[in-house]
Structure formats: structure tokens, C-alpha cells
Image (cartoon, rainbow, N blue to C red; front, side, top):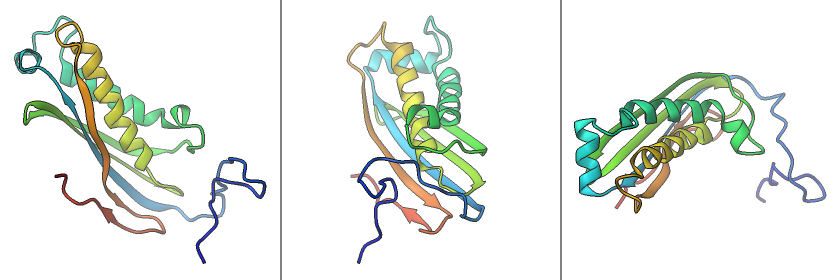
Amino acid sequence: MTDPLTHLDEQGDARMVDIGGKPLTRRRAVAEGFVRCSPELLERIERDDLEKGSVFQIARIAGIQAAKRTDQLIPLCHPLPLDSVEVDLKIEGGRVAIRAAASTTWKTGVEMEALAAVAGAALTVIDMGKAVDKAMVIEGVRLIEKTGGKSGTYRAEPAS
């Protein structure tokens, strides 16, 4: 028999999961995503000459801020005391590659925080580059690794 869905009450209504009795454990999650851009925008990002400033610096800060505010973006997420959020951006394969890692010592995981960091950084790349390229696309946002907690370790298969 499978475990009951923890985000539903006896009537099938959505609820926040009670984590009060869970132990504190060290947890970490890593996510990735990409922003497909025009060659012209990628060149301008590399030269760091967009009018709005340094795309990578500002997108990194936006990603960290998104991770810190995940509970305000996703209705049933618990607010977490984050130990660390790292957001790295680089140009790779004709697109901006974003990788974010979030960690905490808490009662619930940080997968949503890592994913929110990637999404926030990706949206910032689009905001900063839209004057040059209105056809940008966010793609491949996914969890690539998770450690800690009751379910243990997860590692995604390499993207194809």
C-alpha cells in the first residue's frame, strides 16, 4: 500500500504538511535551467555591455532572493532557514546555463528553493535582455540532485 498524499486532508482538500515532529537533518538540493538567447544577446552578455548592468551579477542576486522567498511563491511551502544559496551562470552551448544549490539544516527539503533560484535567475536574464532579444526561452528547469531527509539521495539522469 502506498503512503497517503501528505498535502491533502481527510476530505481531499489541500493543506500544509505538519513537520513539527520531524528531526532536523542536513539537506541540499541542486537545480539547473537554461535561457536560449540570440547570438547577439549572448555576445552582449559576454561583453557585459547591456544598459541594465551585469546580467550575471544581477541574475545571481535575483536567484538568491527567489530562493529566500520560495514560501511566498509556492502556497504550501514552509519557510526555511537557508544555510546557503549559490547561483552560477555561464554561457554554454549557445545559451545561458544556470545552476543553483540550496542547503539547510531543517525538517523539510530545499528542492523548491533551488528550483526557484534557477527560475528567478532565468527570468532576470530575460528581463535584462529583452530589449535585444524578445524571443528568449527558458528551458530544461529541473532538479538534478537532492540529499538528506527521509527519502535520501536523488540524482537525475544526464539531460539528453
